Image 1 (spheres, rainbow, N blue to C red):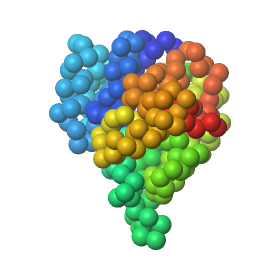
Image 2 (cartoon, rainbow, N blue to C red):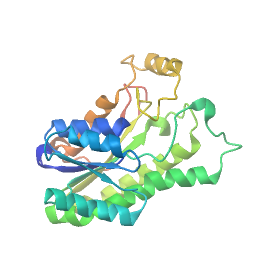
Image 3 (cartoon, rainbow, N blue to C red):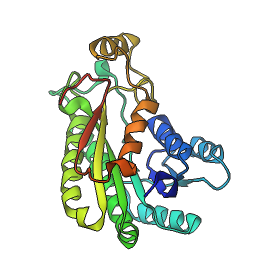
Image 4 (cartoon, one colour):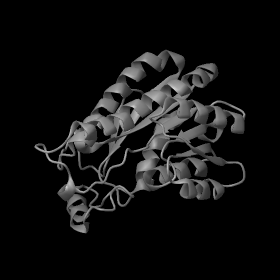
Length: 254
């Protein structure tokens, strides 16, 4: 299915990386659901600026299955068709500040629990809510957002990285389970992006160090990262599933 025929949900789409992904899909003609939990004004302004009828902002905490079901129902009612594509971008509250991170001797299980709910439970919720519609269409695209910290834990964000690693495992098992339904499930993993709300606390010297370590000699932008998300939704990736694509300017080679 061409992107301009798709109806796309971007969780956490009102700001940061999510807003860049929303804009990228809209530029290709897709209709987009801009999901938000707290950023109502940002999400509604983004949706309103994308053109008449092309986007709608809908509130839901994606870790709450009842709210996710209501989100999918409202989206299908608004656009008159099931969602074809889900981008699991929403991030449980987290700040990429290596100096302030919880270290191994102090981090509490509650921190892991919050990140696991945000990465794994939310992905399970949206996937299960999407399945009836995707199966009725014989088509579905699920793209999960990961991290290159699996391969390069330059800053040990223990809770965040563990949750994203679990989400990668879920990506691969879902791909194996849903392929016969015409549904692909993939992950796009980035490094530190310049700049999102989550990376706003990162000192400039850290960005400069990362840039100097990459073949491209710069830090990836949210817009560049969004290009890879579009790839997994596009016909060009129709035979690709269960994969993790690292988009970080060549920093991680795996």
